[in-house]
Structure formats: structure tokens, C-alpha cells
Amino acid sequence: MAKATKTEKVRNLFAKGNSVTWKSLRTKFDLRSPAQMVGKLRNEGMMIYENRTSAGVSYRVGTPSKAVIAAGQTALFGKQGYAASA
Image (cartoon, rainbow, N blue to C red):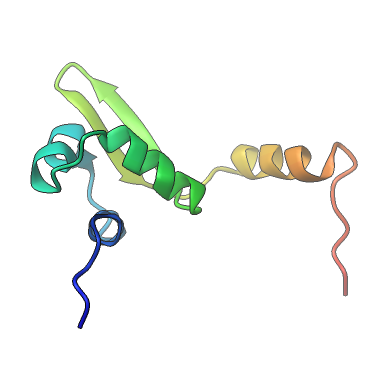
């Protein structure tokens, strides 16, 4: 069995549903840039939200709001919406 890549390990961690801190990504997975890994996972389709507090930065996976979905559809299909084929 092949060893899991860092990307797979981080994806699995987010899939558990818990918040993950920037610092834990940096130390536990030895990432130079946790933000770059989060960006990569976002590009793969994961809806990852960033929470900035005085304690630091944390990330969590969530469900996109209707506004986010509508903005994506507008970006892809324009203001007229999209046609669903039956």
C-alpha cells in the first residue's frame, strides 16, 4: 500500500470536520506554507473557510452559502443563469 501524501493527509484531517490551526498544519505536516495547501484544496473543490482571531488562524470545512453558489454560477454562466438539460 502506498504511503499517503501530505495533501491526502491534510484532506483527511479536514474531512473529520474539526477546525485546524495554521500552526498545527505547519508543525504536524511539516508544511512550509499551510495557506498554499489550503489554496490547493480549495482549487480541488473543498469549501474551506478561514477564521482569524487573536489566537491565530484556523481553517474549517463548511457548506457554501446560497450567495456563494449564486456568485459561482454568475461567474460561469453570466447573469442570465444556466440552462439545465432534461
